[in-house]
Image (cartoon, rainbow, N blue to C red; front, side, top):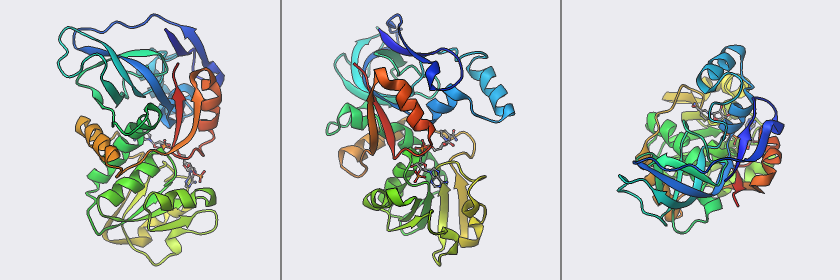
Length: 306
Ligand SMILES: NC(=O)c1ccc[n+]([C@@H]2O[C@H](COP(=O)([O-])OP(=O)(O)OC[C@H]3O[C@@H](n4cnc5c(N)ncnc54)[C@H](OP(=O)(O)O)[C@@H]3O)[C@@H](O)[C@H]2O)c1
């Protein structure tokens, strides 16, 4: 099969299209013919290891010292089950699925084998593969943090970095939970964030949310800028009594398989919608990584797999 191989850690050019053996499912695994994947910010961190020295060493120990031990990156997919192991009970050949796997990677390829009890669910029937693949990454991360913060109806929530993959999901999910949402983004994304359900939008290029009169039950840094964004350093002054300021970079989120099913149901009902910035064919993966490396994508960058 064709796959994108990460030959070493470095710039986007370390990604190379190659022929690799097609995987064969083990007894509890399904093989998925991948029709769409996405370039997530995590993929770019894994490829480039643009981290502090301590984190870089830790990442190399976990992922592989000179290059990723699993050389085919990619965490999300949408596609079709095309083979099942002998013990598989949940899925059949021909099922349309979407999913996420933060440990195994392997979705920058035509096929991947995943355990049937992993983060794999029936693809929402109203979504294309390109649309469905945008749901798991931002959705699972945002949902885990909103749940941890116990977001409830009527609360006032601020999503900082409301236009990224996690941010666009957080705005929509907080709104779904009944919260009043304020989004922080740049001028170009004000319309998008409003359309996702934010009641108010603060354009960070012209204003500072800490100067407003609104008091927030939760301030969620959805883009990992707590150390660099001055407004986030001062965020405590605009918290309501008992409010909290959390970041998507606060530790390892506990993700739940049933949340993937929930996200699929919400997408099927139109309660959350896919946000696609750009779509590239797998042959243009280097270009796609260059774009995500800018740190300014809107929502998701999708890769179509031939
Ligand atoms: N804890 C974990 O295990 C874990 C796992 C995965 C990811 N993460 C974290 O999650 C973060 C977010 O991931 P993502 O995929 O959602 O990112 P993303 O989609 O790449 O974020 C891009 C968005 O961030 C916005 N942005 C950039 N600089 C900003 C700033 N100074 N202020 C406000 N918005 C800004 C951009 O909008 P503009 O163009 O308008 O600036 C753009 O729309 C990652 O960077 C990582 O730190 C954590």
